[in-house]
Image (cartoon, rainbow, N blue to C red; front, side, top):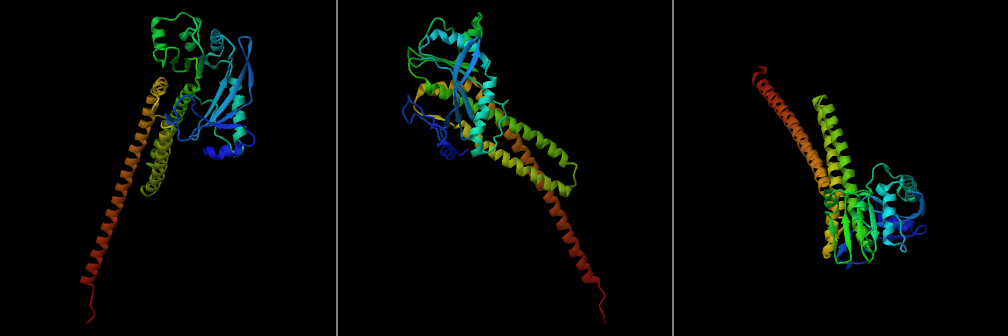
Length: 342
């Protein structure tokens, strides 16, 4: 997406901004193309018999991803109030209808500028970030992270708290595969952005892993179908398959490289640790490896098809050469034995 053009188009009717970091030096964290931020209509939802007011914020990324954040904020509430709110919305419970309504609002806003977006509402990466401005005995991190009110085993506790990081003596960041807990007396907007960026990368890699899987299945079906064709028709169809594979490989290699280089942390060691931990818990390395394996398979099949085409051309050239030699021999014999008038 061309975010500069989109920002200009939306500026008159919507409040727009670009993502930026507030607690680090300007050059400590860099983004080649910061996402475009939009605010949607606020919403009210009911959970466990209590009504909550939620703000909705959207970030549009140039790589094609859209982040939709529902924000529940009460700066006057004691830290202990985080526990019932976290349990009420554990696993994004009760947010399905709000998600679909907000998704449709996003499509209505972007449709005049980007056309009909090919959005699959069932394909998304969801994550919950819980924030408190101070520690409290009522805040059991494992209960908050797992969204369950029960007694957990020491092993479960150890696994849940494995990715715990701190910068000072008054802050704590704990990351799990679908929830993070941030405790800090200072604003944590930079950390929530880092966690979101990691989720965007996970979403992109999952998407292109699925695209590559579908492309590979089509590739095998096409090759099987072509093998039943005549030799000369087979060459043309092989060329068509090779062209499509080459385009797919180039496009996906480019976009996955952009996703993996969405953000660069050069100086802030703590933020680099948090971002690296977020990538780890979201299993980014496994998704990268899966995408790489599929691209490698496509390259191998491209190479085999290329070899097959070259072999077929070699056979064709051999036949042409044999025919030319045969014709030359015929002419030679004709010149030698043709009758001569006296």
